[in-house]
Length: 117
Image 1 (spheres, rainbow, N blue to C red):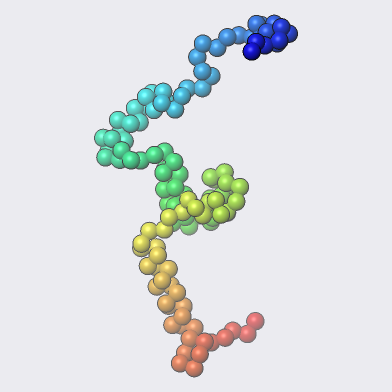
Image 2: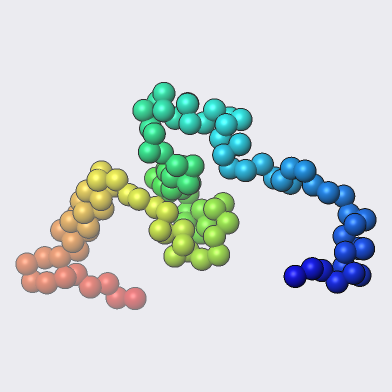
């Protein structure tokens, strides 16, 4: 199917691109020698996107609030940001210890200590 004559004449005035406007992901990887660097460090399985997960998790561990992380990551919702956070075993153990300490301080043999609000 050929283009209508009016469309062909419009297109003839446009510059012809011999190369793509943006470099392909492969050419970027070649230009930065990323594959060689990552392999030499022993992380052949590492993807750039993994670094987003790591960075957001580290910022959470450093105390950055999740609503701030959402903005940094450019996510539209907190639930998306939460999928990027991966607590380590030490964080999970600390959460369990904090709950145990809270329950030990708040409960007695006769039942929980209730606060009047």
